[in-house]
Length: 124
Image (cartoon, rainbow, N blue to C red):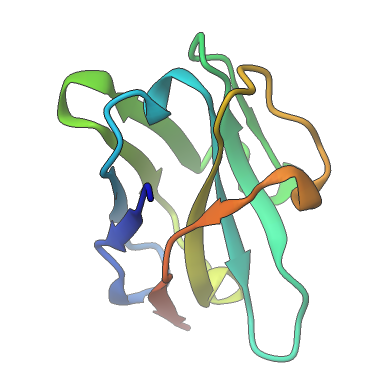
């Protein structure tokens, strides 16, 4: 059973930065579609960024220009660099993967493997 483990969350003031990491226990996971999602209190889970097997990245409009998704295949790790953080970025952040699929779909229901989440709190 492949596991995803997020880390790097914390509390920062508005305008600050954080880098989230997602370690994958399976060596081939980073060849496939992986993504970052977030869930704020009393909100549904939304997609933040996704990266295809070939490294093509896509972002939700609200984070474009501020967040960067990347991966290090040698370290089996997915990253989310978050800059210019805003209070509305406060949420639990999750990484997820779709084993066997190299192009990320838009629908969240495709993602079957999830991490436990890491809290990001941005104070205004």
